[in-house]
Image (tube, rainbow, N blue to C red; front, side, top):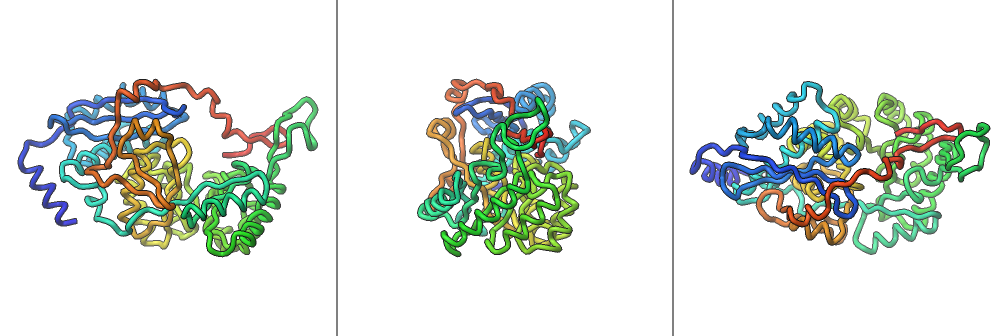
Length: 420
């Protein structure tokens, strides 16, 4: 790390303070995604940094907030002052720790780290303290509509080199749905597939016992409850899964019920991960400091970027909690890489989520990380190690969410919404 500081200081001394000259907001939808990136241009010709303000379900709000509020605030600021700018952005909107403000904060933070790495001539992870591991292990996403299909999915990913496999029975809540029109329902009421938590607990606990028996002891098994359970049923599921020797069970409860992790911790040995929906320190701080979870599950871009993630990882180290950043789903290659650079440098690392991108995304974003044998590898280029082809991005203008995000809306037999 000292060598990195020397190189950076040599580069910085040779020029006047480097400032933000302009910021391009690049909104694009390759492969039907809804991504908003920024390109921070500096007062040094040709030197720029990239960041992601990824909030897919509020992408238009993010774009407008960047263009109308934040970019004018950034112009003229010194790019070297990453921590200072992080703090200034944090209070810029007065109300803070929301999804829109956090991803915007992460975008600038990531771009500034990218610039700093390029000036130093080395990858960002070197500026964060250097490698604590050779590569970043990932967990794969497996699924199936039957127990046997789930077993085969686990075995397929093991053959590809993965040691960690998350299994869902057909999707979030799978194994707990009553088919459309079945079950006892109100007259003229909701007729779609309905979630039943008792059915879910019975089905999923039985599923993982069968997977463990057939797939053997080597594979590390994960499962995402996706906050669908009440506290009592969440505890019951965790207890039933003890014989399956889980690596972790994720998001047993919605964020509003995190106080119940005290009871869960006291009554089961099943490791738990929590935090996919977290945006505020008051959510993750007590779970970590009271040792109520085993893995913190935030998305790096949704908590404020590299600067905040390093602080959370340091807190985890003090209390024996590990990281498992949520970098799958609709996330993008820049966010995948900022998590990667943090992961390489922290002793509290646990696992990172797998995310693969189609060929057009790799063409648009040269230097995107590669996955080989269950591990994530960066490009080793200076900065974040990734670039953005604006011409290709422009071919895919930002689209509306045609699904109106209804995949998050699960309902019970009486028609009421089941969280998240």
